[in-house]
Image (cartoon, rainbow, N blue to C red; front, side):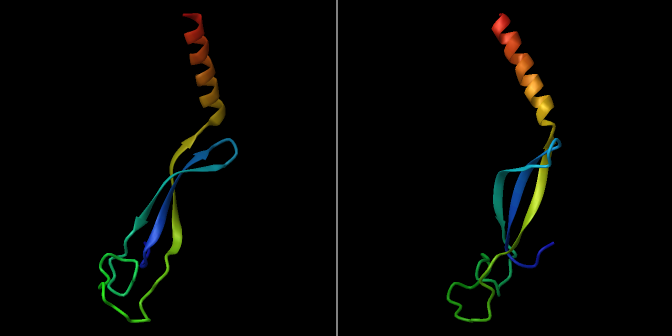
Length: 84
């Protein structure tokens, strides 16, 4: 786990090609009083040693999908709807 504030990027991954599609992101607070980005940092602090930058983002794959299977299902459901 990170010891600095960072962004968590959430992706859906295509099993067909490995492409990642960003679905959402969140800022993760490190809760450190020496990090200017943290909610725990004192508002009047002027210490130049306090961290001021986000750490590299944490990438999370929340779902893996088979694009060809999804397209086939959508195509089949479209055919069913047009037959009605």
